[in-house]
Amino acid sequence: MMMPLTISGYASETADFVAQQIETSFDILQESNALGFAAKGTFQQLYEVFEECSSEGWDGERAKPISVEVVQCARRFLSSFPLGMEAPEVGAESDGAITLEWYRSPNKVISISINPDGWMYYAALIGTSKRHGADFSLMGVSDDLVEIILQVIGGG
Amino acid sequence: MKGYIAPDELLARYITSSRWFRKQDQTVTQNAFIPPNSELSVTRHLQLTEEDIWKIGRKIVEDTPRSLHGRADVETSHVIAQRLNVVPQPVDGNPNHANIINWPQDKDARKMCALGIARVAHFVANPEGKV
Image (cartoon, rainbow over the protein chains, first blue to last red):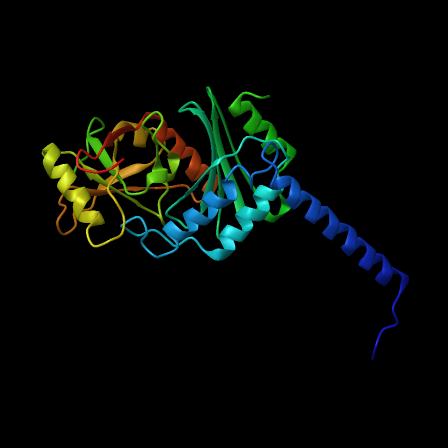
């Protein structure tokens, strides 16, 4: 049986349109040299890492391949960062995770892993202080994590 | 004695990805020390010459598209300081092979251990390779 179109149905269409417009505008800003990770080459690095590490044993030993799903999660996660943020270095871990690293020195560094299970894990050294935790990567970056990154790179 | 790994023994982790070390200051990233599962392969320096150590590394990347960029040397005591253990696990072609074991289950805790090891690891570039 067909359900009648409700007011909330129209509201949903409008919400979808607005969401799409916001996403398009955000993509344009990501292309901006000053603001976005796209223009800073971060997404390009993501695809390079995928090319280098998408086969079993890519490290010459027992590394698990980086999957398309992990790349998609990482891209979505990166897109959730505030515009204007310093770009991370992209890397890979042998358990199949993609990493994002902000580094100043061996004692001032944060590494974030986007794992095949969709979870995001981070660990940071800020002088003598250690911070680590986990979150679901599709939820995007939290204010707390941005604050930790800013402490590492010296902006907070 | 080969069955016992002394705290002052040096361990080598071969660097087979250009993203496992930082060219600008020749330091090692924590990525190099994240295990693929429950154990991480290393090679003990014990009784090996520099040439022997590099020969084992070259063997690992042989027949793969990878390059041997270098190795990360770390003292066993720094691994133990992260509440990890190192056990000898000789394999064909590498009697000095060992595994770092007892990794925490949680990935963020693993990363914290790997960061702690990478912080004190010493990067040695492959004398024959491009870095």
